Amino acid sequence: MSITISSMRAEDCSAVSEIEKECFSQPWSPEDIERQLTLSMARTFVAKDGEKTVGFINVWVVADEINLNNIAVTSAYRGKGIGRTLLEHMEKNITAERCNLEVRVSNEAAIGLYRSMGFEEVGLRRAFYKEPTEDALLMTKHYR
Image (cartoon, rainbow, N blue to C red):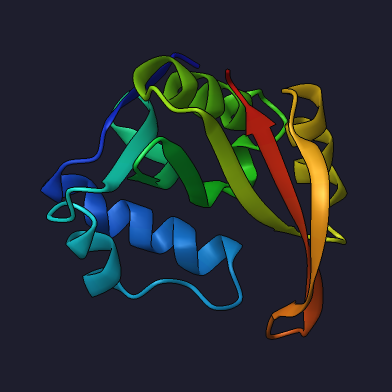
């Protein structure tokens, strides 16, 4: 396995859409994913094993703040450090004061990853997620 990280291109959108469908109960539409290529605030990085897209991270950068919208790794590649690699790549390639994210309170693996990378719990959003309805933990990491 040789994982590379690069900016999402138009030809990556279909694979990213498939990962969205696999990983999220309310995935973004293929059109929403394609739209990220045209939004000046959007940054999407893909993780590939050879030519196969195995994960991605999407963030919006507004002023000096990153909002992490989605990060996902296909089930066959989880537990191999790809999520951490995507987050590290984002941090190396985007300058910001802080990064904010929401995560399902039941997603212990993701919460553990975020904590290990310096994110702190700063709030709770009640019934933030649907299908199933669940609270979101709000986490922030300060870079300055």
